[in-house]
Structures are given as C-alpha cells and as structure tokens.
Image (tube, rainbow, N blue to C red; front, side):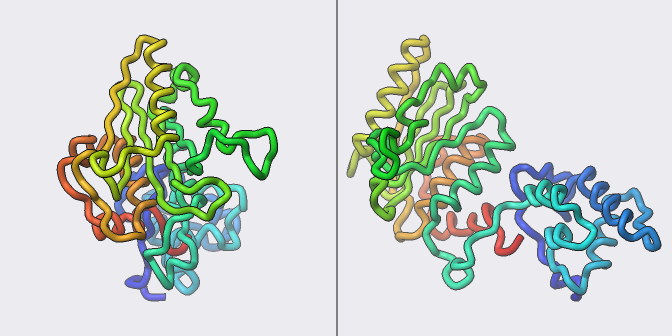
Length: 290
C-alpha cells in the first residue's frame, strides 16, 4: 500500500497529541515497539525515536494497513493493550454514514463521544442523552424513573465529587417514541453559569420545554441553598440550524467548546454557526474506520 494512501485519523480527547503525525503518545509508541519486538526477535525495531518507530510500523504493515489503528489488530498486539490504545482515536461512525454523512446522530453516537471527554476531563460529567420526560416512571422498567440521574440531580453531590462542569443532552421526544430533536444544557459550577442551547430556536420564538425549565429551577434553587447564585441564559438571539440533520452535532459542538472553554456563550450567541460549519466536525468527533 503506497505511503500516500495512509490515512490520518481523528484523535480522541484522551490522546495527548504529543506529535502531529500520530494520535499515539511517546509511551504508546514504545509499547507498540516492545510488543512488536517480542513477536519479531529476528527483525526488531531498534530506534528510540518516536517518529522512526512510527515510520517503521507503517512500512512493515503497508500491505495490510492504511491507518495506524490497524496495527492494533495485527498478530503482535495483545488484546488488552489494543483495547487501551484504541482510546487514542475518536469513535467510529455508523456504517450508514458511508452512504449518507448527514444521518442523524443516535444516542449511542453521542455517548461514545461524550464518554471520551468524561475520561479526559475529571471535572466533567455527562448525563444522557435523555428523553425529555426524564422525570416520569419508565414504561419499560416499572418503579424506576426514565433518567434517575436527572430526576435526582444534586448540585452539592457534584461539588463534593469535584464535578464542576456538567453537560446534558436531551431528545425532545418522550422515551416511548423514536426521537425528534437534540438540545443541551451546560452547567459550570465554578463560574456559576447555566446555559440552555437549542440550535433551531430562540427564546423569543419558543421558550425551553417545561421539563427543562423545571430542572433549571431545581438546579438554581439547590445552588441558592449552598449560597451559590447560578445565572441562567438561553439562546435569545440567533437561530443557528437551518437544515434538519445536524442538531446532535450542534449539541456536541456546544458542550465540547463550553467544557474546553474554547468558545464563550457570547461567542455562540454573537454569530451564526452554520449547518455546513458544524457538519465538518463530524470528521473531528468521529472516524470512518478505526
């Protein structure tokens, strides 16, 4: 396989991104070298240089691998180490995207991305994706709430657990339905800020759903009891989304940027983020093949 066909993958937030040519860090490459050498004592990789180790593995498997994640499925790789190192990469998108890369994000697509960010940022907790009727009794599991983590949401508990940033994604359908539209909340307890983001509406045209307003009021009230005054804002200026496929990506984009503090709420409210702009992030948050 020619070198020019070797495909660079999107790294996960768990990757330290030590190098611009790989999602593996220095220790990962050393582990790859060591495990390779155990199986190939007659032809070991001798260099200590990370780039040379990487180049050597690429060249040795050029006939069967066009991505660096492919090395994790080769004969020299212990399964446990492979499972560990695959976390260096953003998750694989569903096969259906190969035919239509505007396919709506599913709950599991969203979870795969958010769980990597949870592992990377110890101060962050993701809840969801939850149906909008999270407070109701679950029709499929009698005696339990649809989403207990939201029904029992506790500001004090999050603070005690050092969870100061909380992202929540909701689907506006109830749990007995197939799903309609994704929206998000983001709570920053250090900054005492709570934001509701809906990519297709503003508060001037349509207020937040009553279920979300109820949760917002609960969070604010709990904060007051802890002498924490939480300011709440929701989009009241810009309708970002004009097409009907990217609401899930908008929610990921919103939560990730608020978590990493790469954008402020004012940034998001001051200029429209187009559907095409957000669609490009599918290639950042997901890989076509891992």
